[in-house]
Amino acid sequence: QVQLVESGGGLVQAGNSLRLSCAASGRTLITYTMAWFRQAPGKEREIVAGITWSGTSTYYADSVKGRFTISRVNAKNTVYLQMNSLKPEDTAVYYCAGGGVLRVDTEHGPYGTWGQGTQVTVSS
Image (cartoon, rainbow, N blue to C red; front, side):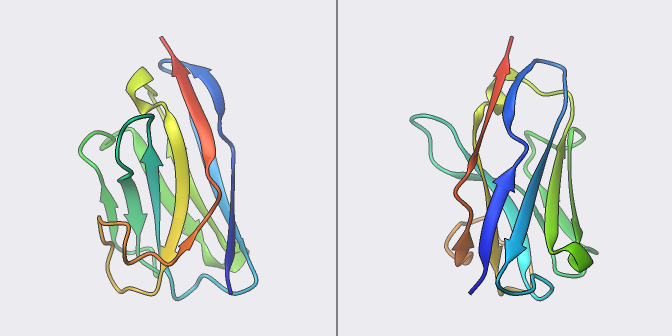
């Protein structure tokens, strides 16, 4: 069984950057497609970015394209989300998720493994 632990969240001013990390333990992530989701108060959980196991295919929500970058280092069992030019509307709890699927799925159903989430707050 894989356990995912997110870190790197915090409070930042608009325009600044944060890098989230998702470290896995218990099993290798190498066969997992990984994704970052977020959930703001009163809103549904939405995908932010995803990356296939090889790292050759990525997906980004329109709202973060050009600002966020997802990456992974399979040797370290870690996935990252670099977030630049942060906006107040990026404020949410960010979750790391993994699933044994071949492609990035924008729905949260296919991802069977989730972290506990990390809070990102962007002040204006």
